[in-house]
Image 1 (tube, rainbow, N blue to C red):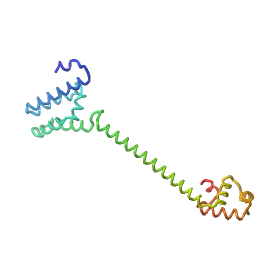
Image 2: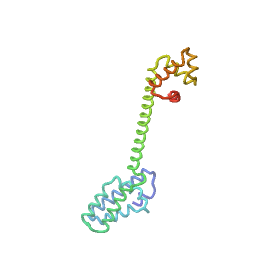
Image 3: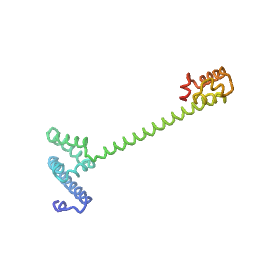
Length: 197
């Protein structure tokens, strides 16, 4: 073991050595048929001071060995304090996990995807509403006669009823009559609302 860890040629070589020795130690512990001895091996592998700790956190996520050890300990030493402590440690590791935890990364991707979908859906709703309003306004204006359209255009230019009458060569009362019809058709009550359209 000391020879394998004396010098690493690469990260991949280091990972292979860790995997090899973790498997050897775990298999050796199983052959002893004594979960307490496996607990000593676990204690060595999970020690934060050891170089093996980072690999241990990954192995814990990928390897069922630790759950099997928990079952063996519970079966042989059901009420022992070290059994309870081991169960609590395994649970804590599974809840907190490693900072590079795949689940956390999956949640970030999922939340990002939901946010993107929400954004796209809101943009679609906003665009649909805008189109609906534009179509509604367009259909309202299509209901106007040519003369009423001219009057709306002149109102938007800021002309008074007298000025509109003289521009179109009609009486002021006719302008007023057209304006009342325009208000009814466009569902407005004042020149300001009409200009807003």
